[in-house]
Each structure stands twice: as structure tokens, then as C-alpha cells.
Image (cartoon, helix red, strand yellow):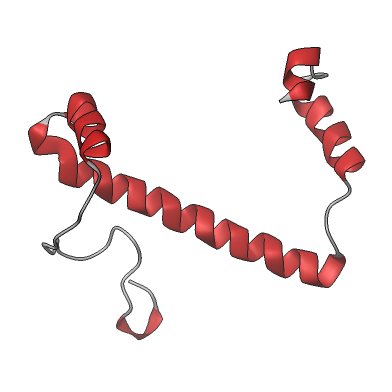
Length: 92
């Protein structure tokens, strides 16, 4: 639990809510996890989205202080980690 009694994503008891999804999205989820796995799937998806939102906030704060990352520098570091991009990957 975070300071001040605030719960972190994934902490605390489950709480029921009503959520509306498009029929196609719900069908795809049920196909992947079955009818009884929908809540757990949506819980994990929401936690991943919160993590991504928090990372976006950190990047925005960094950019305010240091300016945006140099695309050439990022590409060079990526190449060191993963190897040089092929033509198809570079075009994507």
C-alpha cells in the first residue's frame, strides 16, 4: 500500500463495476480467455495501461527538463542493443 492509505494498481479487494465494450472487443477477449476470464483479463489490461500512462508522464517530464530525445542517438543505442535495422523495420 502506498503512503496515506492509497492503493496501488492490483492492490486491495475486487470491486464490481459495469463496463461497456464493443461486441467485437468482448468477443475477442472471450475467444482468448473464455467467458470466466474476462474480469482478470481486463484487470491486467488496465494495469498495463496505467504503467504506460505513468511512463508517458515520466517521458514528458524528462522532455520538459532536457528536451526531446535525439532520434539519431536513440537509433544508435537501439542498434547496439538489437542490431542494425533491416529495410522493412526501418520503413515501419
